[in-house]
Structure formats: C-alpha cells, structure tokens
Image 1 (cartoon, rainbow, N blue to C red):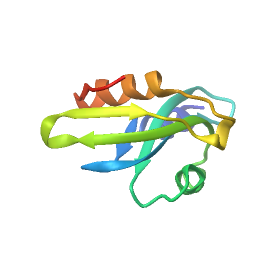
Image 2: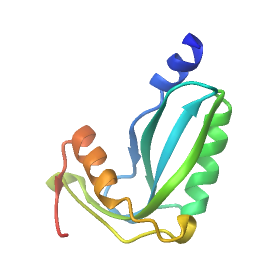
Image 3: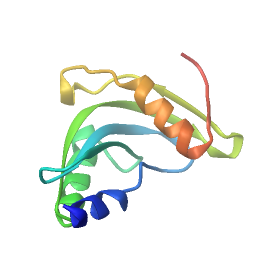
Length: 117
C-alpha cells in the first residue's frame, strides 16, 4: 500500500501545454485498492479528448496506477498573462462539464487567473 501511495504522490496534479487553445480531461487516478486524486491533462496535439485519456492511462498503467475520465472540455491558456479560460465539455463522458473543478485545480497549482465564464 505504501508503494502505491508513493506512486500516486509522484503523479502531477496538472499537466497542460503552454500558450494556446486545446482540449483537456479531468481524470481520477487511483492506486489498486488505495486512495485516489483528480488530475488535469490538457494538450494541443490531441484531436479528441479520448486521445489524451488513452495516452495518460497508458503512462499511469506503467506505474501500476489506474484512471477514469470524469469529463473534459477546452482550455484557452495564456501563460504570459497568467490567465486561463476553461469552457465547453467532452462527449467522452456524456456531456459532463467539470469546468469548475478543472479551473480550480489549474488555478491553484499554476497560479493562473480565470477569465470569462
């Protein structure tokens, strides 16, 4: 159990690309029979939300961790201005819109100011 908690603690809360508009997903990461935490992944290379989920799930599995997608949307990230706009939704989870959770997570860890909605 300690090894699983250690692996989970090494997973960054937020990984988002620099300047631009791109898709993000909100994931719940868990160690086998252990605690979990929510993380945000946002990348400009992804054509679909499922692309981000698939790559992240594969990376986490190599560490003995599992994840589930809670939803997603789009980010407009302006790091030079320390601003982020979180909006939209992903059909990956039937239209779930976890924008507030995502924005709070990104703002708390990246020191970004929310804009828009």
